[in-house]
Image (cartoon, rainbow, N blue to C red; front, top):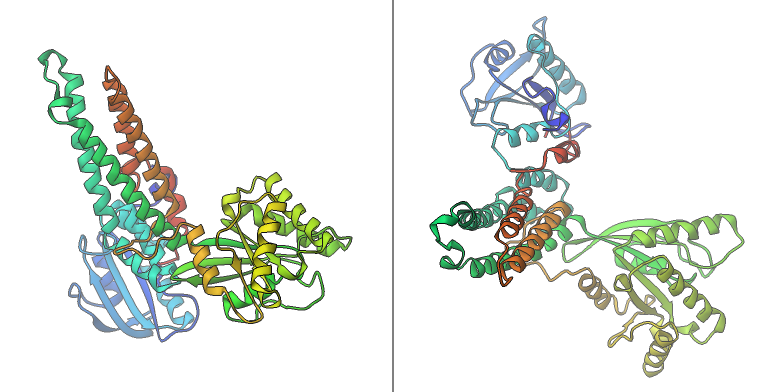
Length: 478
């Protein structure tokens, strides 16, 4: 168990559970074992469980700090599984601070302390109120920036993903038992593997894991979004494209080359998918020190991007100097190891070029750059706002978005990795089973490893080292 998970788990904790600043209502929350004495000392009476009680909360001298509502949730029927006291008062920072200090005074004998980020949810996890996937969904629901992400987080918090993982885990556990029986009792000459069609069952299970993996990838994309970098030579329209996608004049646009000298970031959404757009300095060799640093940062952003949108100027394709610059960009992308599957070409200023001529120029330039031809090139006119819907659709397709599936739940990269590992182990298990002489020991081991990877999602096995990182990213009071 990690040090984060073990530290102070027996001590009562308290925290302000609402965001910093002024508000109409503020909440202070305490959790721990046997808080009855603290409740009586603060409230002057016992509280009826799960009922709101209007009270005056007083300091050590008997002066009223504030009047508000007290809610009492005795263990185990609470969010954390421990006794929980929740106080709802006026939302001024001074009031909340005084109430917090009063609770710390009353709980001093039991070493009550201020909670760490995420500690209430951590205790809920350790006390079996939430599994790890549900605990992560709590933070995801708080951080959600789109309506689709909110719905996905709510489904994950309700346990939809966890139930599917548990069901797959039970099927895999039963299958492992059959294989282990063959290994443990060979003298009985009972071939459980063939009698119970382990091969067919393993195939069906592998298919189910990959189906869940596909939906989990969609959930991870819905949560984490797409890192998109706009790249190209100066004055091709990158800043205009950022403004068009964002629907606001965020970047300065002029005809002067080198206007954008540093990265400019903006987050938008397309069909509920967060899109983190980075506008970069025009890619060219320059003697200007500031601009050169901007170009260097542009290449750093390009290497880290999920998708690099390379923007071209249709009106300059016939210029040898411009073509040389385009070739230099493509060669640098390849030299940096940026997979061409992450590139997306778009061609601006189509309104200034006849359509037939534009298509010939596009395909001619792709051949000159030794890039794969495009059946439907993305032709834009940022001046007239043309082609933006086609671009948005292309971006979603490039990142693997398949539309908002029914019942999608929010997921994380670690969930995707766990399912990938499980699927890989099950595929290796099938290979050992399909040998002329099935290697049952190796089959059993791959199934064990696959089961272990799968159950990491809900936190049943092998996640101790992750807990500190996961819960430390929560807000205080949750």
